[in-house]
Each structure stands twice: as C-alpha cells, then as structure tokens.
Image (tube, rainbow, N blue to C red):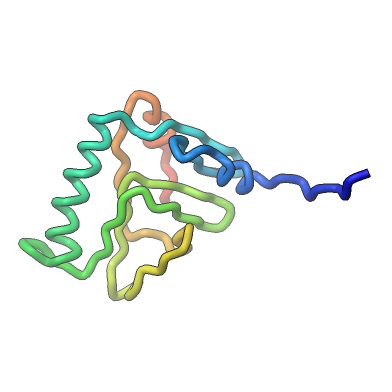
Length: 126
C-alpha cells in the first residue's frame, strides 16, 4: 500500500491551476477566473504604463511607489491577485522575487469585467 499523501490544502488547489486561470482564496473559499479578455488586458497595460511613469519613475507624478500588475498578495489566510497593486517605497524599500507578496498594498485597482464583477466589487481590503 502506498504511503498516505497529506491532504491537499486550498492553497495547493489554487497553485495547481493552469496559467490561464487566476486563482484567489478569500475567507477559506477558492475563487477561479479566466485571464481577462483583450479589452481588459489593454486597459491594464495602459493603466500600468501611466502609473509606472508617474508613480514609480516620478515623471509628472510623485514617484516613490512600486506599481505592479497581477501580483499574488498573501495576507493571512487570503490569497488575492489584484489587477494592479502599489506600495509606497518608504514602506517597502525593495521588491523581492517571491511567488507572493506578504505586505498589504497601499493601493489596489480592479478592472471590472462581466465575469469578475461580483468578486471584484466585494469589499476585500477594509
């Protein structure tokens, strides 16, 4: 008889999803969504470019922010993937190359689509 495998956790389930699926864990429940369509992807790309220029590079804006699209944010038992998230550099001086960020963002943005509307408009960050 093969050795017993430890039970899969909800995080194992989230990380086992294919790349075209955005997996998030909120209040112990796994939420799965497809990657956004072309219009939402274009909106995210354009918004990232504008915010990066002003908020990360300081060109026409305050600078001193990290603006990152689609980063996995692990906060306690929750695992979220906001479309855009930003951290003030004085609070988070360096970005590390880890699968998840464990520091709450100072700002988040969700690009609402028909398929993600209910989840995106939930009050997740208060």
